Amino acid sequence: MKPTTYKNAFSSALFVLLFSISASASYFPDNNSWIESSPEAEGVSSEKVNKLLNLSFSDDATQAVVVVKNGKIIAERHAKGYDISSHGTSWSMAKSYYAALVGISIDKGEIKNLDEKVKNYLDYFSDERSHITIRDLLDMSSGLDFPSHEHEKMFFQTDHLSYAKGVGVEKGAGIKFEYNNVNSMLLGDILFQATGKKADELFIERILKPLQINDFKLWKDEKGNVMTYCCVDMSARDYSKIGLLFSRNGIWNNQQLISKKFIDETFRVVWETPSRFSDYKRYYSLHWWVSKYDDESKIFNTSGKFGQYTFVDRENDIVVTRISKYSQQDSGSTQKWGLMKYFRWAGIENAIAAGRKLIEYGAINPGSDVVTPFTEKEGESYEFYIKYPEIIDAIADLSRN
Image (tube, rainbow, N blue to C red; front, side, top):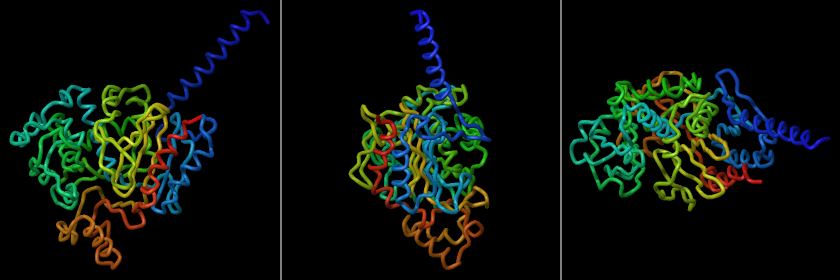
């Protein structure tokens, strides 16, 4: 073979290789199908994937795990009685979704920038809170009053926004990380003042519809306020779609839904957070958690109560979602407390325990007497938290040679 022939053959092979890589990286699932591929076809060891699945399911609370590489599902497992359409509830994973809407509003010029004062949108912040910025809210460093229950008591109120409006200042902004649910609840009001639309409308219009996510529930309180700090119900696959949107720098099917600039601003380390479940260090930025940030890999994640997670390794185009067992409700998406209203000030753990007992004894019927996102005892994670460092390492290991 002549040297020029060798050169042409090499060029052709290189083109095919580059084209296949590009095609793989540009694949997006649609509403009707999601390509399932083998781990090896996407350059990942089946043994490593199985290790991750087994670690995740060592906790009996696990409902589903989905592993995505190059946009394709390379592994998926569901607990007995659940399938690909079964809903979980996000709990605080929702914070990351509604924060993304702030980024989109900045992209569209509806909000000036992250460092703009909240008072420019919320008149009631023209008081001792007037110095607080949107970034302070998103970085959980607003300095707003921070009780030991982290304002989870807000969840049991009739009007969550009214509750959030009444929370005053405890310390200066930008000084300390404090995981305060009020910060997130205020985002819905900021978005409404900036766009004239409620946060659930924006979420559907700007994220869910383009991603062709059609089976979901966006929870509101009894007054109709969107719970922007909590509670989006959908399948593990659909949570993974949102993770894939971030892994792809805000692009979906050649449409820039969220600017790369905002994704880059999100995917960095701002605060080291207090340890909760182990000595494993985690960090925080713009309503996302950071579980690993080093030269080897950078793993960011959404996080929700009782063990809801979507992990995103953007550099390696890997998304892993794990949700815990949840009893899907078909009675609407607006809270109704009924008898449970008497437990509002009992404390979070006491209120949850009381609710479970009332259900067990038949005193209340979830879905009719009480309507709210609710995780029963079987969905409360334990082992997953204990093995969290191993799980993060197992996700990182998917990209190791």
